Image (cartoon, rainbow, N blue to C red; front, side, top):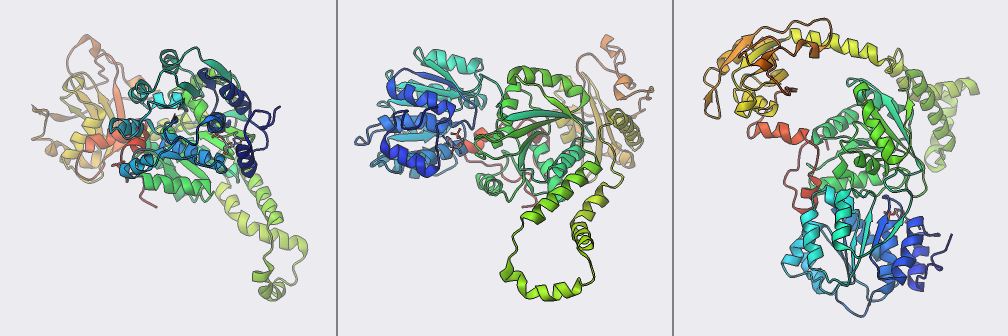
Length: 615
Ligand code: AMP
């Protein structure tokens, strides 16, 4: 393996690297640095997050740029504000002994005038998020006609986040003779197409295998029922007392709920998702970085750009829709030479989702069983003993009390003392987990869920409504419509079934009369609404699904019993949400995958608030 000196870097840079504690180049640095220093060819680099990409592209640029010229010579595009800021700061650290080198980071949600003033001073390297970069180009404040280097960092992420147009716009205004360096952890079609359209015969390098997970990460899965997902998460956290990890959820609503539950259950946790303001996000990230938080519950987009190297675990509370996202999630652990564990909590139905991921990461998932109460108590006990052993005694604070402490404990021998001290801490775990259920008997839990559902059914009245998919009704709109009738606060809404021309919904049976009278004068998109009580479907031995599947497909009109008029049936269940305004939207907004980082990174975030009840 080479040294940084052997890669051809100058003395100022070498000195800065020594200050940063970089002793040896990482694989991607070893390959990229000499390539960019010695050749003006474009470069396509396959590199996972956390492999040292930032130094790989910025050190050769620093080495080659003209510090005497104040014109912008390099533009680095990065998907999120956090990543951009991190890259900008890294470059400042790398160039601290170089005279006359100026770096500016530009991103949305921050004062543009200040950024314009910064540009006017003359900066050789600009790091930016795509939206703000385009904005500055359009305002003619950022001139890229003389740049020598265009760097696309995490190109796959930028495209995933919908920045294709912005990338095209930036690429259009840069000179043909620039050198383009494209770094990406994955190379889906969209990234290949950028490379094809905008790069000339690029050289290719890769650190680790393309599209594969890090070698330092072991991948594990636990089979749970839907109901046991959260208890299983808690058990995994309890069985790993030193857990420092990210729990990934698919939607903002789920993220907020899981975080709220963890906080209520006494864990050091918080949520990070796109509905938080930038200041709130910064606050949460700061707390996580300095380990005041042990568990961060996050959506994929919100966790991008979070630069933490020593995570012990990544937990997929739910697997992502796209297999590529799994690589990004698991790549948050096992960084900078550390080992990490990536866990997937899956139901029986989701087992099929593992295979495509295994193919992508070229590794097998290992099946694990949810720890029993006894196992958790054991690991907590040994962690406690370890902490006792490692704790330094602060004599200055404690010495004055020791005399009286000794005399209070007089008569207890060493064994008794140890037993009592350990029990003070440990009894709460013993109590919590005494008689704890085995969460691995998925079949038993599924049956008990079914019994629970049938009890739920008994508390619900099933209603027919004369609106269906053809009236543009969906579960969200139906919930909105129910809410608009002001039946009562917090009425429980049960199962919803949307069919083509009519639908069914269940509501708390204590409000049956109120529901009928509330809907008397209701209308939806100009149509009079008719709501009637309908008989509950009879359960035929097995689960819910067996009750469905009548023969409405043949179009025999209204059927109250098990009718299903062809195609998909939109099912949902929710609790009534209070408060005025656009209730339908609040349902949709929080349940869809969180893509709002794009907004909060590059445009002011106007949607602060959800899920921030506590802090
Ligand atoms: P990056 O992939 O650029 O985000 O880097 C991941 C982490 O590894 C950052 O915290 C870097 O500071 C650190 N790092 C990068 N290169 C080296 C190196 N050669 N030696 C030690 N740490 C490094």
